[in-house]
Image (tube, rainbow, N blue to C red; front, side):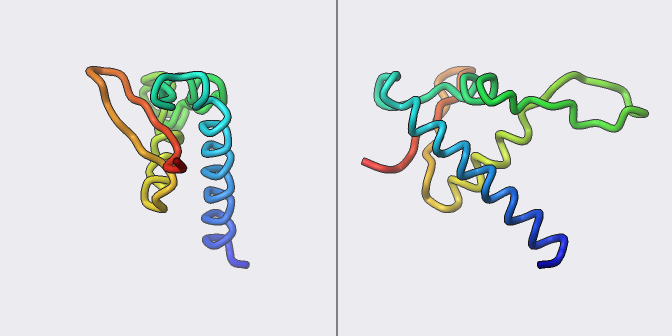
Length: 93
């Protein structure tokens, strides 16, 4: 497996772990909508995305956003916004 394929495989595996976590938490929330902030904070998915030599702007949730989008593209995750808050849930009935 080349480097690109290995990285994409690992990202796919990370997305599966996020989906498993969301499914575990759905029963705790109305309509199964899990707050995105709960996912990011519980799994500690906020990272500083800039090189150390760049101006720092703090941690961002980009990794979660990428993994959630991968799951949406596969039809495994739904996403919604309510005001400034974001929520997600699995597409299973």
